[in-house]
Image (cartoon, rainbow over the protein chains, first blue to last red):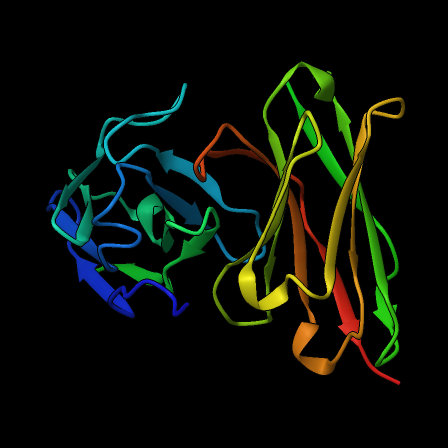
Length: 110
Length: 118
């Protein structure tokens, strides 16, 4: 059970939009609408941004949006801000009943 | 608002068993949700370890299943992780989490660093 595939790093300028991909298989990302996304600052616990592919938890910013096509889920951040510089992780339900995370993506705001 | 707090040893010897407890406040665990553990080796990504439902059903990462036990003490409103046969590869920050189902980890503890060393 290998980790979901995310780009190691992405970057963008303030005000731009960026997209982080999360690629799995038909046994996880492609098989279920149960992908979640997390934001993590250094030394801090992760924070839930998106769940069930497209849903926002209470209090989450709608500048973050999720989508899925086939075996790849995506997180889009619009109106990029300096405070968005952080690590981002996807997580998917797996056919076996377990969960699997992506390797993480470091976002740099230029 | 629910709060989670991990407790346990910061240092474990190789081959020993790690025992961590997560105290839950602001929510009665017997009311619902899943309760789980996630770890993060220094400088690396997140790894799901397992979870338990409020009714006691357990789910574990397949590669860790032989070494992991998660159990709940509803009388104390806490749940615990036991991981045996610890090695240096198990050195990580361990987080306890509340899961709304299918990986919706909406609440996290602050995390506790566990180092495996003799």
